[in-house]
Length: 280
Image (tube, rainbow, N blue to C red; front, side, top):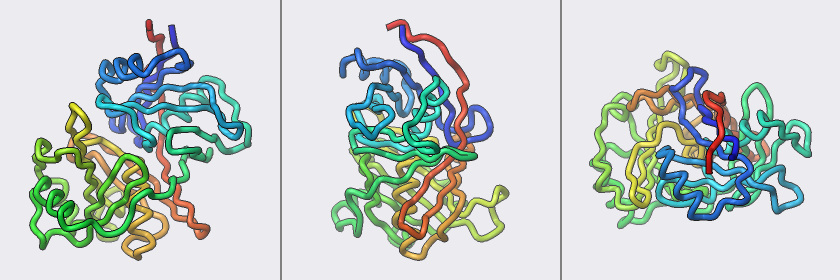
């Protein structure tokens, strides 16, 4: 039996964020076990907490989708840190939890909200014409609708697409079957004061991962990559609130801060909504 938590990430309102299943004491599980559990939970991600292998890490996490393992993901990072702390974990460094994942160490700062320091982009810059054409076709976009497009990949493989109109972004229908392995994040800027919660950016995330194609409710890794692109380009301010999930009945809120040092912090509310034991 292993302790098991269901954590709602990126929303202060229960059931309106992105759900994460967290399995504690997972060192004895095989890859096949983790894959089977992730398929069973049928969530965008399930995380497995293990003993760290690095001397500077507080724990190691393995992050699985229904289609395979990810080197890094944002809402599992915050949700895993929340679950580890709630279960009695004591970080080596006061005020900071250091998570070990396949992408390397990730620092999670503790404050009113947990916030992770975005890992560096592994791919950035312009999207080549062939990939750009695939993105446009998959999302049903015309050239005139796209303001900018760039790679914003910090592990999962995101392409960022900046559109003009947030209302049109929310209303857009996407043919998920045409994604064909793509992971694409669309964003549009809200005019100052136009969003009821003061959000400056509306975000949607789409992916086709193995056997699954879906819209992700709230996506920390994508929002990190978007910030690492949009803030240095002068397209977003150093601090803003992003909204995600509105098109599918969620209300994700992501706090983004780009510090003068160059660090990008991505934070949000975390809450355990269910606990129990996994009989496996």
